[in-house]
Image (cartoon, rainbow, N blue to C red; front, top):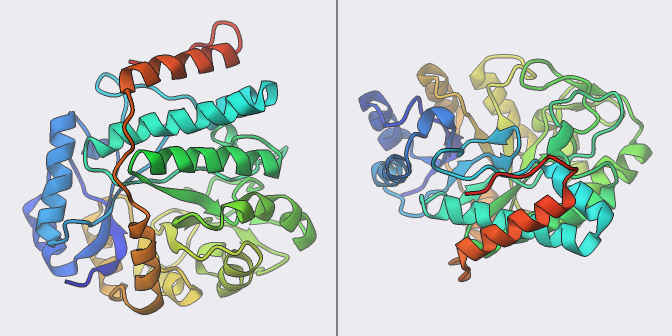
Length: 347
């Protein structure tokens, strides 16, 4: 069975009758989970398996945004709290080796949580490089403000996920760090010249070009394409993401329903595919929107299908790890690297 080139959300903790019929007919490539879909471990595992059974694809990717800090879909009381990306950056500044080890171990532990539920893809690492005056939507999700540092920590996080049997999605390519608006609500315009972007924003992503998946930024870079945001810009995707940065993996849009984009869901979906996105992501579980995205989504074939296959081929069984000992080691690393009084809660 050939999947369609989109990733869908669902409305709640179980698949409704309407959603079940939709999934059988549309056969999305993947599913993305949010807090509205998550209650207890056994419920999440059952939902994940039910999705795969309904679409008839045992290896259908199931995604989540599990970064730590403000963006953590799995949390207490069933799952540990993880630090924001900036915590690894602070530790890196004190001790580079320890900072990278902590980032890799933290991601490895996240992967253990996810793999136990059947979740195979985590929308992490964040390789955005924030600047002074940018919107706080990235903020402490970022690893730092220097491209080389961000790339090094992002690579460690990606490796930790892969070690744990979970694929990483680097985001938000080619960079959301300069955005002065939150793309969930408004379209950000970045006016930096190309040379500046190449030396900063793009430079953080270039060392990560070999990762299996990436997620676009709903950001306009006026010096390169003054009209279209990266998600729907053939120039940005072809010249910058595939060219300057050199990313050759599967490229997915950020959530196509976000406020940064204009036009109907059908128009947004068409534009993303025409621009060069391999897969379109729709997150909010709105059934009418899901249908509109599905109606405009092509079958995953040709070069996009080859990229998808190469990406999924990187999914390996997790290496053995003593999770209890690893959590203790991780908590110690982060406590040593945190300011006084700020300790990371780990179960």
